[in-house]
Every structure is written in C-alpha cells, then in structure tokens.
Amino acid sequence: MAIPTSRTHTIGQVHFNDGLCDGCGLCAEVCKDFGIRIVEGKAGPAPSPIFGCIGCGHCMAICPRQAITVDGRCLSPADLSDLPDRRQTAGYDELLALLQRRRSIREFTDQAVAPELIDRIVEAVRTAPMGLPPSDVHLLIFDSRERVRRLAVDFCSYLKGMRWLTADWFLTLMRPFWGKASDRLFRDFVRPLVNAYTGAMERGENLVTYDAPAAIYFYGSPYCDPADPVVAATYAMLAAESLGLGTCMIGGMHPLIQHGRAARRFREAQGIRHASREGLLLLVGHPRVAYRRGIRRSLAAVEYHS
Image (cartoon, rainbow, N blue to C red; front, side):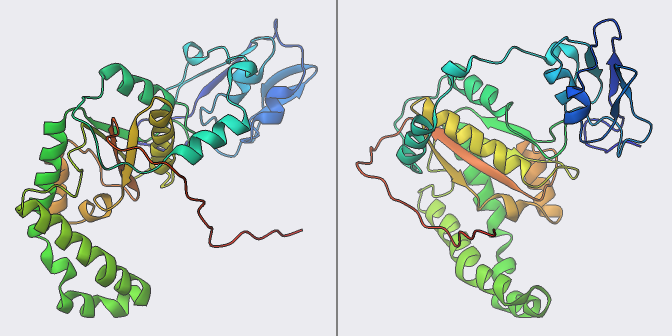
C-alpha cells in the first residue's frame, strides 16, 4: 500500500547498514509511519507500518552514523545536505522585523526581476513543508511584464464568458444549495471583483496583475494537500521580501478557473496542468513605493485551552 500522488504511486525503500548502525533508536523515534524498530541493537523494518515509507527522509536525516538511506518517492541519498550553522539563521527579532516590514505591493518599477532572484525564491520554496511527500505543488513562472499582462488579458476575456456565474438568477438558484455565506460572498465580493477586473481591462487598466514584472502561480494536483500551495507561496513571498522585492498574493483568479470546460481551456492555454482545490498567484517586482509605517493586524480569536 502506498499513498498516491501525481508523481508516484509506490512506497519508499529504506535501507539499513548494520555495520554502521549503533542502535541509538533515533530513526525509530522520528518515523511516524512506525515502519522502523530496533531489534538486538540494530535498526530494521517494523512489521506493520501504517502506510509504508512515504519518503519524508526523517530517518535518513537524523541518523548520526549515516546508517540509513531512503530511495523512492522522488527521494534519494543525493538529496541530503548539511544543515547551515544555527548562527547563520535569523533570530526571532530579525524574522519579526522582516514580517513587520512586509506589505502587499501593487506598484512596481519598470525594472525586470533578474532570473537569479527568481531562482533564489524557488530554492527557498523547496524548503516548504508539505502534507505528504513528494510535494505535489506546481510553480508556473511568468518572468516578463508582457507575459504577466497577457495572463491578465486572457483571464478577463475568460471572465466575460462567465458572467452568468454572478447573475442574479444563478445566485438565487444556488443559494439553497450553498447557503447564505456563499451567497453573500458571491454577491458582495466575487461579482464586484469580476466587474472591476473586466471593466478596468476594457479601459486599458490592469487590476488583475497590476503589470507586475514577474508572477508565480502556485497550484496543486488532485492528490495535493490543499494547504501546500498556500504554504509554498508564503515561503516565496517571504523570500522575495528578504531579497528587497515587493510581492502581492492574488487569490481572486484561482477559484474561478477550476470548474467547467471553459476553465479547463483557460488552464490548458496558460500551461496549468491540473485543477486544484487551493492556489495563489504571487506578483513579484521591485517596489515603486515605500511605506513609512506598519499596521498591527488583529486576529479573529486567540484562545488558550489549559
């Protein structure tokens, strides 16, 4: 038995080197598939794992004697790397300062985003946690202002053919099925958003991607944990901020291109491989504006259960 993804349908293969293993038990402790046990002072496979090796690599990464290797599920020993020294990492104060300085940017200079900066953002995204490995997150990189604008133009053309989705007759018909909250969301957010997007584009103004010099679309596959693309996009946003770039997460496009034949044609035209439950478009560029003060946001609730 193996947990399927779009990339693999097999379990990983865990290899044990008895000559190196000292039976410390760390590998068995971190394997939450319960696929490893210590017998007579040596690590080996347990008889009843939950799923079979999912390829997380924890056992291989924690072994102090390099006595375990994992192959399969898009993982191999070649993927191991030395951890940076903790003194190289940002402390809480530095991280909080980065988070406090970040604001959504929709005003960009004409300067292109250098390919090496995009590469550094992607490298940071590779470290993002995921629900189940291997990652089913897909990145579609639009690396020029012209390509980013064409995405917005194509999306607005697509929306014009989908106006029935926000028509009164359709919303009235659907309200008993999807409830009051969804009805209000469509009437008070989706419909004004669609009208704003298409109306502005007719005037030559791009309110979809704001003519950003680059954009990255994060989406998953039908197997993907729905949180994974959002987590990956967040890592990209923070990496871009650390590089002096401005970003803005655009959430209004993804849910409108997931269902129906027209949506499938739009995805295929853009090179999007799958429909997925969650996804985000991240605009990236050099900021044309600089904010002078931050804003402390509130949360819906912070509750402690002791």
